[in-house]
Image (cartoon, rainbow, N blue to C red):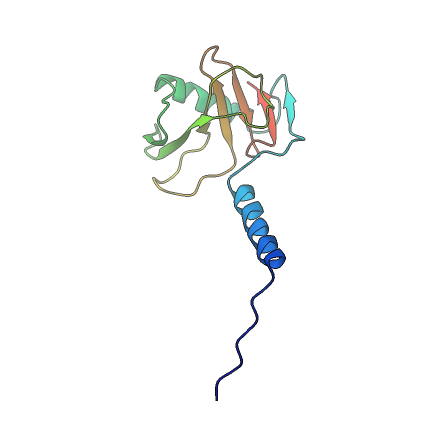
Length: 137
């Protein structure tokens, strides 16, 4: 005995599922919320770590190619390449690149701590929460 064919979901249901999946993927891709805050200085916890990472990345010439780079502690650190400032939190008209703050084993998962550097001016921003807030170093 065969089961009767299952009815296909309506196009509205299929569209809702597709939109939910896209929303999930966009969230995972790190699109910044529109209500991000930008601060003119950095006095929060971990600012010293961000400044140290900035110094090390500067000694490497702020590489622009995404990838793993050797770190002084014998581990590795990652740069994700260009930061497009899509949500417009940082000053517009600049070319930014993003760099991880904390080193780890090569290939390990990235955390939320980044610095974002304006390639023209060298102005650097620290984001401890993956582009939700920016603190100028």
